[in-house]
Image (cartoon, rainbow, N blue to C red; front, side, top):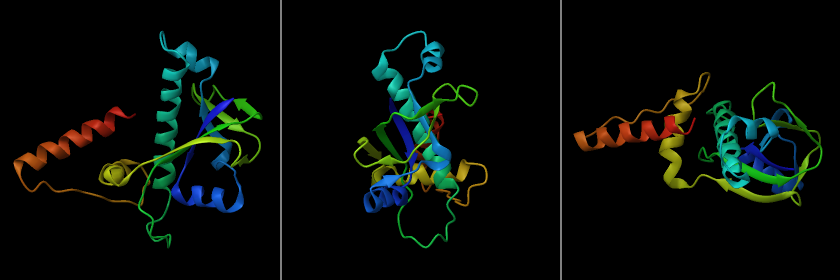
Length: 162
């Protein structure tokens, strides 16, 4: 089954260094029967995008749990690994797309990786400030009326990702 695994840049570094990665709590997202039921329309590619967005949101929650003084100088970036794995348990009790992976994912299992680029950093920091329990606090104060509308536009974009 193809799964979407929420990750962080340090987790990707461990995957490269160790050749395998155990997702946090074994949690991943996939196109499950329950996810298909939840949508009246959509092919597997479109539903895969839904699972990818869910994993990106979970990656944001992982970033929110990282202390600001973690010692690394890496910018906060959401990351999602796409992998083909066999040992998967559906968890519709948690959410429509949630699955649990029973074994570590190897680098050979990974078919793609999505990582935010530098242009998304301000939006990721702003979103981190909105996650309950986050140690990140980020505020961009508008300098001009034009930048105030840009900040408002970014906030709307982040809300639509939920």
